[in-house]
Image (cartoon, rainbow, N blue to C red; front, top):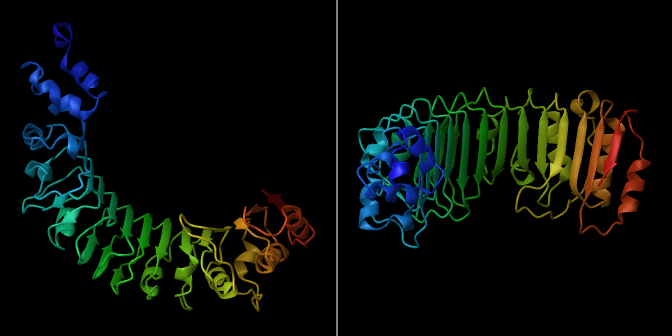
Amino acid sequence: MDRISELPDELLVKILMSVPTKVDVSTSILSKRWEYLWMWLPKLEYLHRDHCSEPGCKRLQTVSHCLRELDILHDDTEPAKSNILPSNLFTCKSLVILKLVGEILLDVPRVVSLPSLKTLKLQSVRYFDEETLQRLLSNCPILEDLVVDLRDYDDESAGKLTVVVPSLQSLSLYIPYCQDIDGFVIETPNLKYFKLMDHSISDHYCLIEKMPCLIEAYLEVKLPDMKSIIGSITSVKRLAICSEAIMMLGEGFVFNQLEHLEVCFCTLFSSDRVIELLLKASSNLKRLDFSFMDHHVPQGMVYWNQPTTVPECILSSLQSFSWSKYTGEPEERDIVVYILKHAFHLKTATIKSSESSAVPKFEMLEELALSPRASATCQLMFD
């Protein structure tokens, strides 16, 4: 140990970075030489069950002078009875990444200043009140990436969630099926990526300001009023959306910049209305994918009637088309045949068959291979 102790601080810190935080902190008892070295680590990971002892909790109150990343996981079966976060965490000028997972009580003090924080993840944490989140966010002037996950959130209601962050570029919001929530307000004018998974069955409002810089959006929602969400993301270039959400849409929305559309076909629906609504609103679409979101189970289609007019994007811009878990049933076959027949600029059509399909794969392939194609260069690929 004496020889190691003679190494320069920079090298010792690199050595500590290669071992778990629990080991790093324990080196402070070796000698005065090691007492404060761990505090110069740029990243600390706290697993609460490893630090629930009296000495461990005291050490948690000390935040490294050059800390750049802090991950705290509270995985005890019992929730934290008090705020286990160090008070000086909220004024750490060097902190860039903060991840809190588990039933940690988030009680933000009056004095907050996180001038370097760019990434914030809050999963299953408990909020002191409904103003807590925005009080924290309003003091993160360069925050770029935010995840708010209410799964395993045990309080009766999350109240109102407010996310007003001008600098934010990526936002992921998860609201589980059993979670009561009054509503949420989102104002993020520079957002580029937006993921909303809202499964709550409770009535709640959603107020979202326009996102003119949005590039990609993922919507898995059950809100009865989808217009407020769709109206805020019309500048999106890539959109993944569940058919259940599409059924709640009306006419009038336009995606002038949409190039890639992914539709989850997991519910019984009038497929012609769903497809026609989206395709007519996306005149510059280049790629169209029919697939299934995680944990979504296909339930089949009610019927398919060809649109009275062919959507402009199929005629003039569509270049790539794919279908995952294709069953070969008549309704699905008719949709593929329709696209092949009218897509003059189609380059590839990829069909991935479902393992549960009752139609033999060879029969599926033969039907589609013999169907007419508007594009002479279109390659039909079957998996």
